[in-house]
Figure 1 (cartoon, helix red, strand yellow):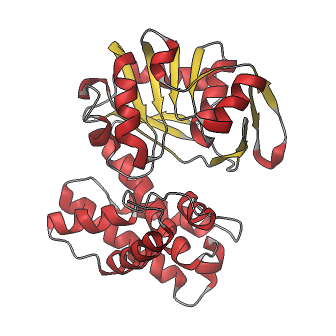
Figure 2 (cartoon, rainbow, N blue to C red; figure 1 turned 45 degrees about the vertical axis):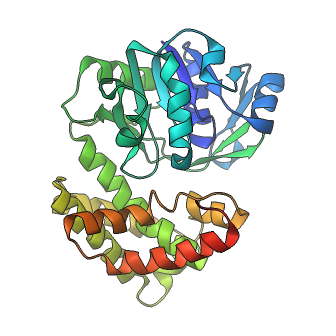
Length: 312
């Protein structure tokens, strides 16, 4: 396949490197020092703990159109606050047979990317993997798993979904999976991520420390319940087993666990506050569901982000 990685940070860079190693034609879109390093030295990926280093020469460009032509598959992995600019840049390289898979935080990516790209081209995806740019040109995988979920935005599986998941399997991502209910998959990840992103960013503490504090476990459970209530009112299938699965993941998090929004706050970078905490509040209002805990966290984090100048 001819593949475009739109956003070659931790997630896009890691998956793109694996897809390239498997023999696909892969073009990476990046910017700044990361782009310059990739063009000069290639892309280096490191597995958990820094081992199994892989360095590959890559084709890296600033804009998708610089690569010429259209693509079979576009992995859309920019931060959500860049979605409008990135989706507009991708539009010229989307052909009639192109599949676009956003793997981002939050639950609104299909709608956001769909402002610029034909809706029929867009799949729905999520990933449980954590990775980061260690330094320009070097990607470090942080999580043990590399799970990526792929599905149609509003339909059961199709041959194109099966082809894309097969390509991930061939690239050494055995935990790539197909979903026949992409909305449930997106909301399950949202139910996992939004609580820890919000609380960790407010406190500056790793998840394990929050859980160890009096009332910490109960707080995460109450935040999960608020998201579930909003999801159910929206029409999303979120049975008890979905909540139990997310609770189990929260239960396994340790003192080493932090999240990207928390790290972005600490580094003074732009944050995905509106995509995570803010979305729960706005979606709740839209369907008439009260979200008092998320509303309080959002007010605190919005004030913090505005004082730092890291949110629009």
